[in-house]
Image 1 (cartoon, rainbow, N blue to C red):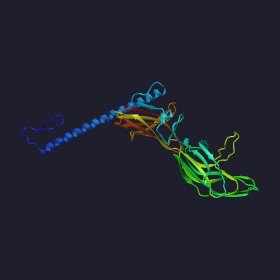
Image 2: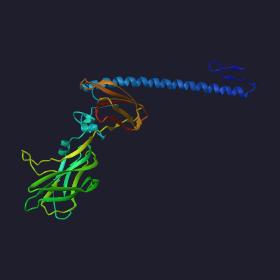
Image 3: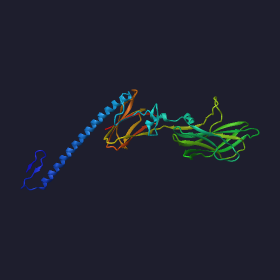
Length: 358
């Protein structure tokens, strides 16, 4: 039997018998050849894309440098987000934004007592009656961060004296509530708290209430106190005193024990135009001290291939940089999502990012 020169395929003559073995071998040889050709073509396309991605990365670095100097603007299918404004940082989950830090998390998100006082609202005093009464003393605040409270103190001022009474015994109950719409939802309620005072002059007693509840940043809360037993001794109770400081201002002297909880994970999402694109290259600069955590990326809800390296920020200081690549095709528009993580004692900042679509 004769065979073709290049691919060794059988060439039957008119009077040859067509053997099943020969025919099957011809088909197997064709299958093998086509498969090897397709593999070689796929490998060639892969290498071509790798070259294009590497070239795009170099172009992004140059473009970013020129844009930082004000020498260039965004190019078609390239987007540079400096995160200089609150609008640039939208949509932001958990993590915070500031003009100085850009997007940040970690130790600097821990709220202090002064932060809590700065977010305080109405403070209302209650007056002791000779019979039990509903909640009468209140303290309103907006949570300045995520905080776990372990104690909250209240003040009882009893006007004791020869004629008014020299002893007072009362029971109180504490609760904390979160505001949802127009309604208040209870998040904690204490057991009965006994308070005793005696003497012949006005006495102020602070009583610590063990509590255990967590507040979420930006949400509105109030703590409240009610009298569960009565007394005829003239007295009042509140979470702050009514004294003023040297400037004549109301004295916000709340006494609490609290454990601030740092933000250690968050995300930033930005919708970008991706129509007709086949690859995406992302460079994101960030700082983290100490280095426990980092940045990962998704495009169109698919994880990008990520790696990290040292880089320099806009001021020339050493920082970290995420390099991420995504393989399309992509829809008309897609969400770029950056997921951020750090430790509770870390100082994390997402500085900026630039993406190119090929």
